[in-house]
Amino acid sequence: MSLRHALLGLLAEHPASGYDLLKTFETSLANVWPATQSQIYTELSRLADTGWISVTAEGPRGRKEYTLTDEGLAELRHWLTETKPQRNTRSDILLRVFFLGVLTPDQARAYLTGLADLSQQGHDDLRRLVDSVDWGDDDLSVHGRIALEYGLRFNAMRREWAEWAATQIR
Amino acid sequence: MSLRHALLGLLAEHPASGYDLLKTFETSLANVWPATQSQIYTELSRLADTGWISVTAEGPRGRKEYTLTDEGLAELRHWLTETKPQRNTRSDILLRVFFLGVLTPDQARAYLTGLADLSQQGHDDLRRLVDSVDWGDDDLSVHGRIALEYGLRFNAMRREWAEWAATQIR
DNA sequence: ATCCTACATTCCAGTCTTGACATGTCGTCA
DNA sequence: TGACGACATGTCAAGACTGGAATGTAGGAT
Image (tube, helix red, strand yellow):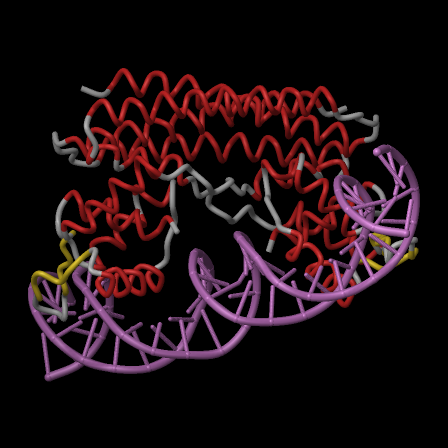
């Protein structure tokens, strides 16, 4: 499971509450590993049970601040270096392209141009996000920036591809 | 759920058994919407119950051949034209990049160059697949080819990005 | 004859994910 | 003071997905 490690990774940067982590998932991490509130809170409890994180402070509104333990950091490093990436990417956007042949050429082209627009929009949104975030200077932030650059290039590539694909339909 | 529609889409091309569909998922569709044997057989039963597909022939070894019904085709068209792409893509490959900062620069660079190699390999594998498939001339095959072209470009983009990213690490 | 591989399906336990519902606090603005 | 939005957590049912076990047939090679 990668959600587990996503949480460990975020807590490696600095201690945070479930709510804080949720906000991060809603913005930057949404592009890479979306997770809902229920999932995050459930997983945090489980991680605390395992001993990879621990509650280090309790704030005003029931707020619990979690901190990565040494075991947690070791597990994170292990995951990064020892385990092979597993998950194949699923894309329902691309899945549709496979079956566009059951539509009329006009409908198919409309889908692809819509996809080009969507990609352009995704690119713009991400650009705004990257520009708005107050990046620190630590290693984790540097890598976060590198990772988001991927999203920018990805969206650009997809837009170009969608435009090309639209021309391929007879 | 997209697996449902993936199966409808494949059956739109020609009738097939669960086993046939499984083989297709293992090759071309693995890049877009991976599915296991248990999932495919379970979903086929459910689709038959719904009436979107039906068993039209029974072969030698318990083989059941499913055919798309008119209702199934209508549902497929509806999915393609009326519903918005939903699923955010998850990538545990990219998730790791976010957290590479907890490793030493050397370890981080090693991960990225490994990723570049993996992408190159993915590109080569897909190239071989595309070249080996005996494409028909119908619309569905044309669109399948367009969709796989996406995979080629995607892998190329990722390789270039990973090589660039490795240079960004101090 | 026997073995092996490819063909072919069914079922299951456990985990991950989604989308909701439920509950409560704190600060601020009208 | 009352309403509201942001903060903050917990729980649940249903559906999707993974990985494996179990079962059996047909055809070809040794």
